[in-house]
Amino acid sequence: MDKQLISMLVCPLCKGKLKFDREAAELLCTFDGLAYPVRDGVPVMLEGEARKMSEEEKLEKAQAGTQVGNNKA
Ligand SMILES: [Zn+2]
Image (cartoon, rainbow, N blue to C red; front, side, top):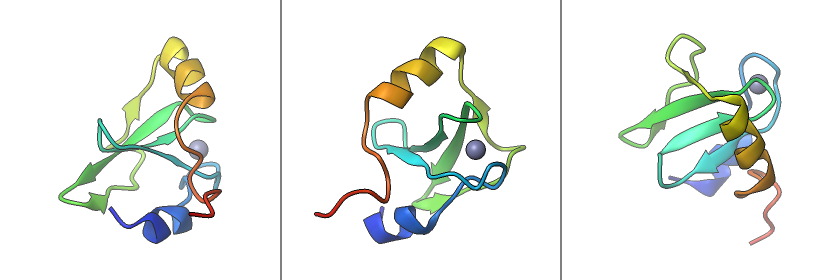
C-alpha cells in the first residue's frame, strides 16, 4: 500500500494518526483500540468494519510498529 496514502489517513473517530500493520493488513488506531481492515489495498475506514483490539494488543501496538506519517524515508 502507498505510504503517502496511509499518511493522509486518520482515524474517523479521534482524527488521530494510524499505524499500518503490514502483516495483518490493518490500520491501527491505538487510541481507540480499533483495527481498520485493508481490503485489496483499499483501507476501510468505517467503525462498523473495524476490529476491536484487546487491551494487551493495544499496548503492544502502541509500543511497536511504524508510526504512520512520521517517516521521512
Ligand atoms: Zn481513533
